[in-house]
Length: 187
Image (cartoon, rainbow, N blue to C red; front, top):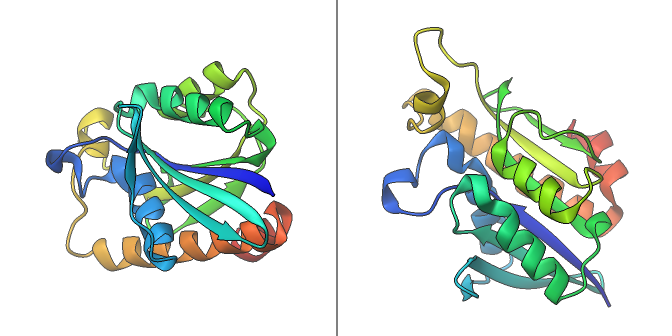
């Protein structure tokens, strides 16, 4: 049985729960809910839930080390369960995409996302699939750090809900039919 790891990035704590920077956690929660599984702690680095899809053992991961150190949980769990980077997909927020949009990519730079940067550094490769969830555009008057830690507006909430639903569907297709098929259908 092949093993896969899907990591949703965010920050722990109730003060960050519904913030833009926690879009990755929201996707991980949606995928776990779709399969009726709950998260459990893992080595004081985060939480994981396990599902089976088409003879694949899939770990859904939420690092609880704060965004910038997300790679600690991802790399440790991947090493422990011998999950290659080619079977890892990371979900995170992206300012360059408007709210409601999602993008799947097979690899690339961190694009300024510090959690993804840490994962790339600790795994030693940028050949890691990613699903970016749009949280932008950022209004000019906002500082970037303050914007990503802000909550979604009432008008943005339905767009976010649609993006989270589409992201969860894209992940299911990725697990069943592969990244290329998911990219073709959801990008």
